[in-house]
Length: 462
Figure 1 (cartoon, rainbow, N blue to C red):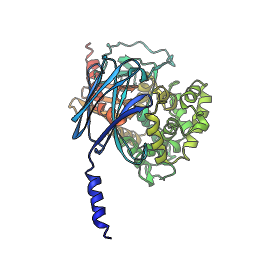
Figure 2 (spheres, rainbow, N blue to C red):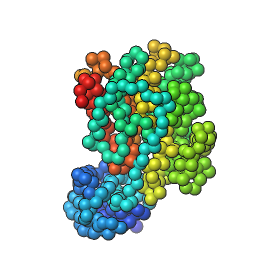
Figure 3 (cartoon, one colour):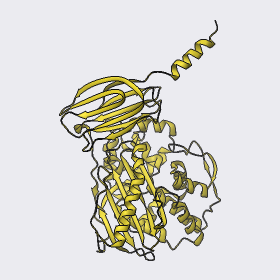
Figure 4 (cartoon, helix red, strand yellow):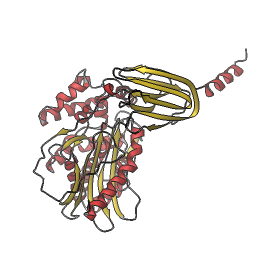
């Protein structure tokens, strides 16, 4: 029997498989599962007021009209042609998320998911208030104007500073003394610690460090013997988790924590590698945080600093034994499982307050222990980090962003051509926008928001 025609027919059939759509409850939320689409197919437009959404795809979908009852409402679903219309029948808040689920996360094949969260199924992030380490010196303050593009709590601190001393001259702030997860914006401090060691002669930019599958964090990485210069650049420019972790482990998480604590940042924590906090959130460190990661993380957070540091050190050590691909699969499942709660992220991730973090960014740039070469490398590298606005009024802009599930952060320093210098910290956990690729679309808006507020602050006008 000649099987070649049969194989060819199967390949053609698979390549041109008709899209499919079905819906069912997925724990606390309702999921529309779409098959036969590309991984980047589909756009999502949320209704004003958050009572529904319209989606558009490049390929026609099977018609599906359905009314789904919830505890307090009904969700009306209308799939027709290339469009999907989703509405709350009673005009209640309804969170809608569009994402591509990788093969191996929930079954052997990739699919597109539209997840619908009724009001009662949605979890919110409540920023934890803290008392500033030192009483802030009163400075003129302009009114905070919330960003129109953001949802959920926003912690913001923007200060015009004296470029020589770093003293705040005037500020715009919202919840400056509450705790927020840092995500990848913390990698600036890893760069800072590394360059302090280069300046002190403990390392050089040409020192090679081994990067292997064993010390890999999640997502893309470059294996091999890599220079400190390469690792530092990739940790900032590409936000490579593995590069950051290798430098973080080489410097020492406890040393990095001691560095920021010595700057007076008593509420900031930077002693956890990316692999450790992702492993904890994925539920793979039950020997550290227990079988209920939300409860275990909160318990660790409530310990005195030395006790929490010990827990975090155990997490860092045990995470190194995990396979990164397996970790990523478990992490994806954890994010859209009914047990996910954004509050847990501030307990497990590195964290800070907007005021403390902006002060640390200031000290990073003005650190007198750096020599001319390491200071130039720091500024040049951060100038390549995400994100900034290309504008003729900007003389320098160093920045680093971070993102995750319902979380986006950005911080840095910018100088206008007038000579006015600003530091900023922007934190937005618990957003209504869920997965990282979609929330990252806000990064240009955040950068523009920072620049607009810097101009407002620099001009002294309300």
